Length: 415
Image 1 (cartoon, rainbow, N blue to C red):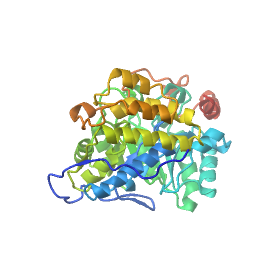
Image 2 (cartoon, rainbow, N blue to C red):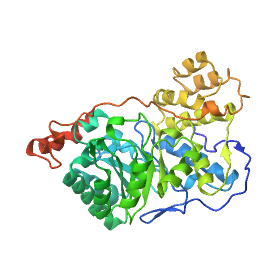
Image 3 (tube, one colour):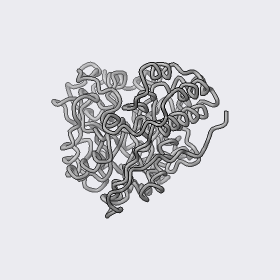
Image 4 (spheres, rainbow, N blue to C red):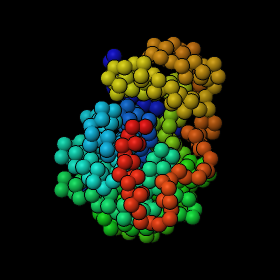
């Protein structure tokens, strides 16, 4: 299966004002200069090599739509566990693969063990597999937090410090910057982000990113941008990035205005709309240009995404089509595609079947405006966070908890 390489350039809305003074300077993460101060948030099952390629290509469309390019944003792969990486698990090795166009190559690691985290970082840098390492301390899913990982881990301050120290120690000789992504805390009664930010800064990270929700919120409710502002006040020597409820370029500008953050991290807002990175680059460059693709361009994007997934899965077209199904509702949000077509697209098993269904749609439909905007992905509802037994009793690990985290990565890798 040949994979097309030239992206369709989305139609841009005319600029109402010429490009003005940049809103933010380039983002500096260690030796890397990110001209458009935007980071693609790692998302499980989403930000693989295919999706990152698509986002980067459509980001470059900004060169023809106002002069700003989202191709210069930082695109981070989905989280991998350090245990699985050290063991060279085949799927994990696929997940950390990068295309030749990806610079810098960014890998996000999950770990609950400083030793394994250090070994994973050593592998990445000595084998020249990454130019930037991000550490995940923000994942709220139960299979991670019940092992003491993700958003649960910063509660144990010395464990948190130890993981960061081990990774920075391995990465520093190779000039590979390390960053941290985290949440406000476990819940409103167990807030960790200010302590965690100061610890990360002291241990030599190149930037810290904060999702303005607790683990107990998951993705429900509204992100607390005030917490991002407070972290910016507490962490003074490295960039602070804001994450949460950025559904448009205007949201990103408002976050920067309200918090003073040095850049933004975008997750669910780009689902089904990789051209958001063009909008963000334009907005931060002081331009009002926004991309407004019609249905023909959106379906062409969906089709190209599927092709890139075929390449990612080594020619396995059926696997690629199973993967693209979850993206279809996001791509078609707001368009008059019809429930029958949407249902059939969610069952596609080949590129030919995608083409056949696209051919039945009214591809002259313009960008639908407001119906296509706003939240994407599932918000869920607040919940009690799954944690190891007696996790909240102390901010130090006891012997039993230490035994739990010693096995945690193996468990998460396997399930």
